[in-house]
Image (cartoon, rainbow, N blue to C red; front, side):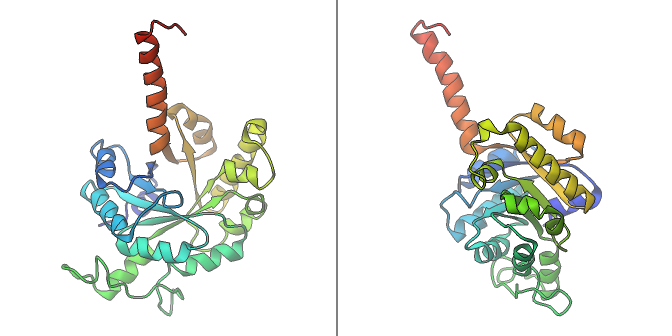
Length: 264
């Protein structure tokens, strides 16, 4: 299947995704049937999952012509990223990097093990190489070259090195992480909203200077306006557990108040 995110980049199109934590393919299908989302992001950094889950999530997305992204932990990033790509995932969001050297080292794990590419990803006997229709080695190499690599800018050191990180060949996308950024400085997010907005804008501006796509997470459509004015064209809208929690709390609170004759 065509790499949806890469094709959108090449065509200059904006993209929309949402974040899932469930390994149930049914949830991915619920997103797919809306016809509104270019790809889904599986939050493996927070979730429990098996390698079989990754294959099933990828299959469910493919049925609806959606792309897939996986967000991986730092410590096991190379192993998880390679297994996810072998399972069918089209993009990887890497966390907790601080320097351009770390970024370059990580990227090598997803580059083909060929002379021109100089990567460490070899032939993978998984979905596309061991079952009909068999994918030739050359096509496997081409597929790896089209995997989209994104990096969280969520540490103070990473933002300090943002120009160097965005200049690393193979960095396709960056995304600001406000909570980890605050932790790295001993801040509480609610007390530093202006500084967080300024930090995200700094990342966006640096990315655009280097031809890297800045991606932003939002919870409501109206939050996109400020970022779109800066040049952001890639958004992730909502996160599965927060979407559910908000509905249960808001709608449930309203109904409970009505049933008990309460006023708010």
